[in-house]
Image (cartoon, rainbow, N blue to C red; front, top):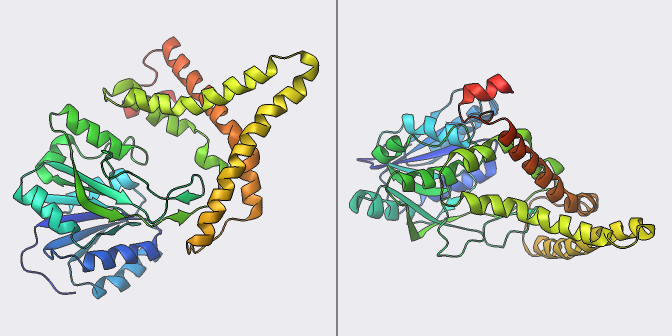
Length: 346
């Protein structure tokens, strides 16, 4: 590995068990038109396999790579904060280890943050094919969509420190949404840079019920945002969460209204309706699988598992969320954002 003359940008990346995608990212950084940067690679494990693998690949690249670790999985939010502590320079860029930057990515960050003195910017994340949840994890944002994603953003270091970094209570969910909104509340709106582009290769993932069913830990974080943070989009976030559950609950109630003698059949009608809707989604996903060279595949059993279970998850999540909110009204202050109080009560 060759040292470079006078780097200006510290690129912070957290990695956890994504070796093939990490190599794609490093190759993308190796081709940057702006060569004056360092990479702070936060090793979130597994240990020691990950560190041994990283030690082998680091010498292949011409830019300085600093591997840092606390010997535990910090998660993306805390991991990025940890990485910034080891950064050398006053411009901090973030990208995820499953992304590939365009060749002029760092050139544009230099133009916007170093030359134009902007405090916080975000760019466009794209995939070669459209997402189709829950099977194909991809991004399909319109070029003008102003969404703050930690997989493609940059800060002036002092502004990042002023904001307190990523919220470590959220850490693995909405921590990038939160820091963008926090910047707005502190008087600086983040600027969307259209030509700051990062490729997020689509990934095929099997359906897991646990990935879509609200957990208690998720609800604590969700409640923390909608209850204790004064974000301009928090009500839209809440509405988006409950909308699908309300629609499905409405259909179930409508079909249960006819005479009780037909009740079992009436109950099956909305289930059939939603399952037919999901069948069309499954057909669409199968088309994507055939046209894109995914490394893995989805079994017929996994498709069936999705069809038979997913329609009811939104209703369960809706009930869970409403119960959570009612409980807070009865016992105000229980869900304090203070971490110690969370631990005290739960």
